[in-house]
Figure: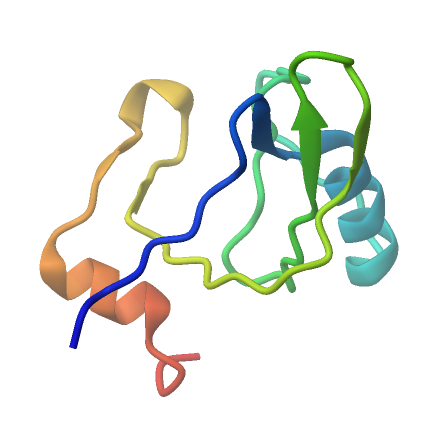
Amino acid sequence: MVPVLIGCPPGKRLAFDVTYTILHSRELNKHYFDCGRTNPEMPCFLFRDLFQPFFLIQDMVTGDSGSFLGSYLLKVVGGGHTIDTIRDYTEEEIYHYNSPLDK
């Protein structure tokens, strides 16, 4: 068995679509949310809320971008209450935040 890693073609990148993700999250969760200190480049998302991130494929040569329509697996590996307290989680915390059995 040989693992095959698939990435973006040369000259393209996958980028988190922060603007659309925030708009969609507000509509999905029916309330406004953000950090105590607002930073448009790094919004806060609450663990108890439904979270559906959106991504873009960006062409670094032409500047064009479009929605990423593929599938992905999101794994929470760290976080914090403020930007100053963001840290890597322990293995137990990673299991807790990513386990489908822990709601």
